[in-house]
Length: 255
Image (cartoon, rainbow, N blue to C red; front, side, top):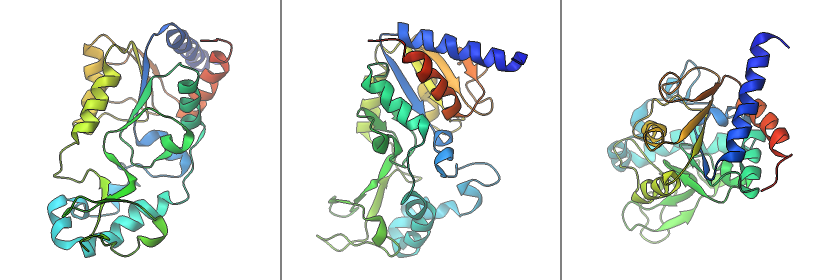
């Protein structure tokens, strides 16, 4: 093995040992875990924010110009997600939960892929694209991706529906904060996967975990806001590569 390859393998084996020893392990995921499913991330030269004006995702602008915002939202979010499927990283996190090696996932993603993969305990910190909410009467409906190219109307009051994810200018829902706190409570280990840590307030979650005494395993293609002063083990590899190897090791253990 090349020295760097050997170091990565040693880090993966150490991570597996920590997972087996941990009484409560949780995962914190960002856009990077879904790139292998064909979903672009938000930042960078080819990221979503390089292609659209963020005003379409500002809640005040949406409330005034929902009919203008919807075609953009459909093209950027619903159309790419309509056929997106979980990749091995998502499936292995679900496998870990089923094996009692993972207590749950906190995700910044709105792509529903953890749900599709089979995770049961999921905190969708920024919401999801499975539901639509009426800003006027509060009624929620399931999103039919095939009918969202045009502004969908509330079946009750006929107001333009809003995707059930957090827009700029909106607060994080209480349920997301509460679910996060419940997963952080007594956690001994956190897998940080595919996130730079640049988004606030979500980016503070691993820091809060660290302050609570949780050890941090980071899996990212590049160093992040956490790597230097929060992370205990940094594995600089694609998420699926690492999790496939982790599963091979963890399969030898029973819990």
